[in-house]
Length: 191
Image (cartoon, rainbow, N blue to C red; front, side):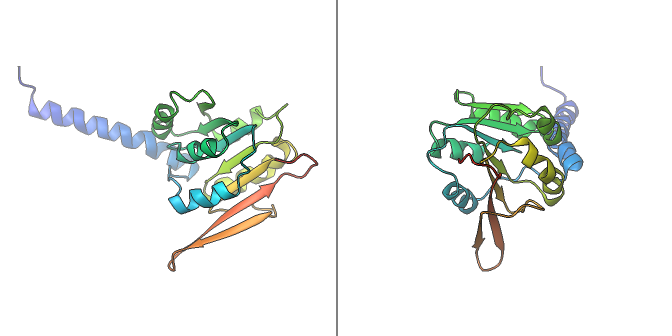
């Protein structure tokens, strides 16, 4: 039996609309699209990540999972946690880490994630952020209280309002400039 072409077209259109919705609805809620970091940005972020880190690396807004994958390659003793609100990119990230016992991925809104505070009892944590300015503004006040002393926060493109960076790198191609920030949560522990 040959399927009706109109039915096939409607099913295809419905599947495409569903996939777009799985990405677009969370973008409308958060203002942050699932945009991967460029190779240059990832390389710069990795230079700010200490190789000897053997604790938890959290990618808040893990998206497709590329940055967390690079961080776990750089720090082979670390454990990874990827958190995102967007189901389709998170599904791709889950496939990427399916055979990676050191990585766990979860779908949670950023604010709710911090309220649950998964960092209690952890040593210093490395937090990776590539979120938009509005989300960074919302998270900035809560991060200092949520993260253990000595934790690092590595940010791609957008600064944390009210925080003073320990390091700031500028990447440019002559047309645009991107900034990478490294912050340390005050305290006597070190990452």
